Figure 1: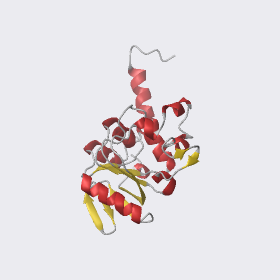
Figure 2: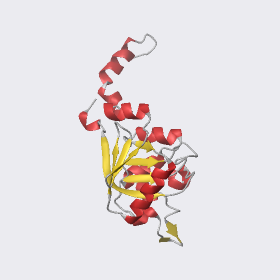
Figure 3: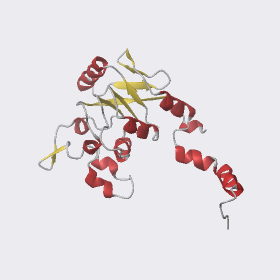
Figure 4: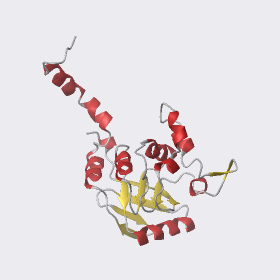
Length: 199
C-alpha cells in the first residue's frame, strides 16, 4: 500500500448531470473507442449531448468546467461495460460521483480509478443538483469512510460500497500498481510452477 494511493475524501465544485438511465454510450460515444489509449477521452465526454449543430450548447459540462464532483440520478453508467466512460470523466477532472444509483460495472470501473461513488436518496440528490445550479462555485466534499456528502453546512447520509471503501481507504484500488509492487512475489511463484518454462 502506498500512502499517496489512499483516498479518504475528495472535494471540489460540483456539476449536476440530470437524467435517469444515462448509459455509457451517452457518456462516451462508441465511435471514439477506436483510439488505442485513454489519453484523449476527456475530449469526447458526453460529446454528442454537449453539441448542437456543431456548436457547444448549455450542457452542464459546458457550464461547469473545472468541477470535480459529478452529481447524477438513477442508474447512471448503465449499458455496456466500457471503462472508457469513467476514464473520460476522470480525465475531464471528475474525482468523485454522487448519485441515486449506478450500474455495478460502472461503479467498479470507477473504483479501479480511485474515484469514489456514493449513492443517496432521490430527494437529497435533486436538492444538491438544484443547489449547484444556484452555487456553481460552491464546494462539495465526499467523505469516503462515512459515505457522506457535505456542502453548504449540510450533510447527506449516503452509502459507499464496502469493497470500494476498503480499496480506497486501503490504497489498493490501483490493481496494476499493486501487481507491480508485488512483482518479486509473482516472479517467485511463476518460477516455482513446474509447468512454466522459465527459459
